[in-house]
Image (cartoon, one colour):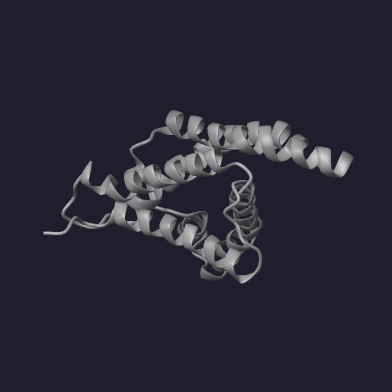
Length: 188
């Protein structure tokens, strides 16, 4: 711990946000558990415009301004691939995905695999799309794990070896617990 004040500030912010996350269910109390559509898609209350801005905010923030420049600095020309992806593909997706969102809403689909099943009535194609989605998500999850580990290491809170892995597991257990607690019914 080279910077005890920074480490203390990090722990304080983590503690406050974790407390807010665990107590979030008291802000909007429900007596029943939300259904999958409500949990995954915010009860479809966000329209196309709000979803568009949420996607834009998630794509053009940490990814574009932290990860891509770091990759370009660390690897050179290889780091410019994500820049091309972001500049060319994302606007195309922002044009095409609202139509998919509308079609999925009409069929009640929560995932792309659900929509493929409703549209083409093919369980095999649905399985292929679902597995492709899971496999495509793995690098993103690995990136999140590495990012959290880097933040913990920068704060002097990531010990080497098995102890560090346990710290990382604890952080994600708190995150999963907070998400579960926010969606559960309050105790009687």
